[in-house]
Length: 273
Image (cartoon, rainbow, N blue to C red; front, side, top):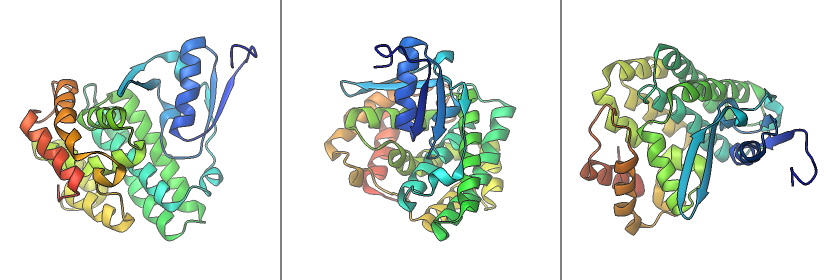
């Protein structure tokens, strides 16, 4: 349609799927994108694109898909229901956590990630308590930008590789899948990444990173199980194999088939990470 109408620009008003579609147009045509995000997806701040075909999600980076301008306006998030706000915000939080040990992590991306955790950890509970207020939504939107900036620099770690496999293979909702998987990947990696663990614990103002995340999840009544999102139990084995094949080689902890199968089983059941 963009080519047919000789479009000069694509203006994307919406969440991550909307921005993602605009990026697909830009990737194919070079038409510039202006993004107006209405969720905390963060896609508007990265040059990362993703497309799913035949049950497999493919991602890549290309400067053409990075929006030329972004309009952040927290009033546009007021109609986002609390449940979706929570899932979207935890998706942003996952960008932060994964950025601390992703393949291209560095002190700058780590600093952005830690500040993103602080902003989201403060903002999301406010959104739950005061859905019509702008204070929490503004903090969450700021955290989403910080998280996306960190992710764009650091790249995809084990958490995102896991969620890309699950989303592509089972057509699961993006933000909710990230929210469910995050505590399990954090518990898996944190003991083997002590500096990242200490930074996260401080950002959560908690004795440990896992304890801080657990307290936040309780406060937000966050999504807990892959089963509720529609993942079939008999898909665990195939997903585990695909995740092991896609996992970054420099993950803080060895990514074995047995370990990932156990992680997915716990996430599917909603067991304690």
